[in-house]
Amino acid sequence: QRLTQSPEPDLRTIDQIDSAMAFQHVLSLGLTDQGHPARHAARDWLARWPHAPALQRGIVGNVLCFGYKTTGELDEAEQIAQAARAWLTQDHAWNGLAWNASLEAVLHLKRGSYHLARAACLRGLLVIDNHMGGHRTHASVHHTLLAALDYEADDLASAQRHMDHSLDS
Image (cartoon, rainbow, N blue to C red; front, side, top):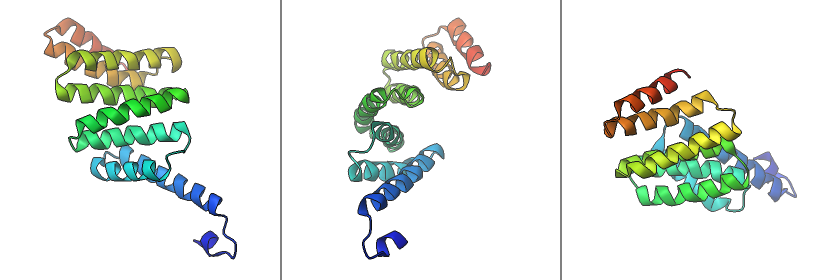
């Protein structure tokens, strides 16, 4: 507030601070599972800072995807998931891409598109294995989803292997 009250405010710096603070707020809402407010905050952030760095847009896009999933807006969630994946890929943001793959898998599960959910999980595991050293915590999310898919397909042996892999994290 003091910066805005100076005789010659540095509007660029003020905007950067506003963006960073709003970004942290969006991320906090997403990380604390507050889907409805996360949806609104993420959508507003992307509208206000459409030219922010790709990494930030990708992370906020993931939060918006989660928010849309929470409110049942699955078409919108899929659209923003694809945009977020493109932004995160542009920045080689492996953690964000792994998160994005799990979000997409859940979206496909909600629609009953099990083969697409499986493909998203496998894509996420490739990112984790190839770029994140097999990060066990991230991999466990994908293995849990794969276990649920295998259970639905009555492949109990594979479901058990995925659950065991998940629980080893």
